[in-house]
Image (cartoon, rainbow over all chains, first blue to last red; front, side):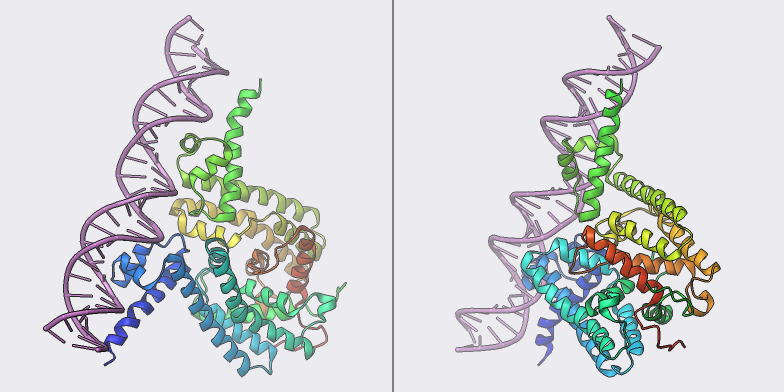
Amino acid sequence: MNNQFDHINNSHQKIVEVARDLFMKMGYRAVSTRKIAEICGITQPTLYHHFKNKKALYVEVLKTELFKMQIALRKIINTCSDDIEECLFQVTYHILINKPTSMGQMFHDIEKELGEEDKKEIDKCWIESYQLPIASIFERGIKEGQIRNPVEFGSYPIPSAYLLLNLISSNNREDQSQEHIAKEQARFYTNVLLYGLAPLSKEKRK
Amino acid sequence: MNNQFDHINNSHQKIVEVARDLFMKMGYRAVSTRKIAEICGITQPTLYHHFKNKKALYVEVLKTELFKMQIALRKIINTCSDDIEECLFQVTYHILINKPTSMGQMFHDIEKELGEEDKKEIDKCWIESYQLPIASIFERGIKEGQIRNPVEFGSYPIPSAYLLLNLISSNNREDQSQEHIAKEQARFYTNVLLYGLAPLSKEKRK
DNA sequence: TTTCCTATCTATCGATTGATAGGCTCTTTA
DNA sequence: TAAAGAGCCTATCAATCGATAGATAGGAAA
């Protein structure tokens, strides 16, 4: 009853999942349609029955990825919206665990490999999935006085969101963020972002 | 007298410069040897007279790039080593202005496109050019009490260096860091890194 | 049963890629 | 002046890429 229906969706879904892992790990250009098909256990032309072309597959991978992150972040933020520090920590930890292997690579591929219309669509998804949720934390923090005056310090919600995201993107050229390390790392990022590396005693604010 | 000597080095040097711009902007795989040759005004096989293969050219581009940064950062750090905030600002600003278009892409290419031995060599250059100089700032800051206790806060020199570097790498999906904005941006990064986004009044250190 | 559609296959195309072979033309050098 | 080599060229290779054409099998719908 649902075998044939599973069959229809199984290939499509599996292709997206396999392509997701490969694209995010190797980059768009480094992944051939043949490699994707091989891992899926199908031949390369079969891919073109499910997707118009390679680019369309990549776009679907991105949209799926971004949508999942959007759902997760909004849930986290709604759950622990009372404490900004805990909220930032939870968000940081979740992204650290679930983010693509190389976010820098992903951004580059979006920027350089996609067409203008695809890029615009993905940009919209990106803003809804990452920028707005995280910026909302800082917006609330500003209102409630837990974040410095944006006019004096430049700590507007959106720049602050990218501040955090750039910390997380982490091009660390040595340690791989293991799962048990991720928690410490998220705590470190959150602490630095909120309180800075300088001791509290010294005030040299200009 | 030096025409023929210029001729020898001119091509070699021009190839490296052109390749640098293309590789850093488009990524290793997205740049063909023909494209590099075309912009240099030579034919593609001529490239192979100057470099063993595409990978060797990329390695030379990286080493040149890293070496220039090493020289510049050490000079900056030696000049303004008395004030850690000013030192961090100068370093941040310089990297922000002179860094490759997409550092994330560069890291990815080093990791995925190079062989094991090349990777090790570039890693050594990277550490000498970025990691050690920046970490030395924090090391000094810790000794002089301008940086929090590493044991309590996790603010060890090397993780702190990567903290700053990740801020600078900036995957900002919107604003391009213009030259006049870069100064404000560097100031913002430095301020946040040292003093954090939270107001000074509230102490919720755990 | 017959028709149609979906999913897959084999075979192949044209384009592009990195790389090599071999020849030409200068300049340097012995 | 003759030999050597650097720098660049044309021509071309084998591999790989994304994509298409056309056939086949099997279930769904008529």
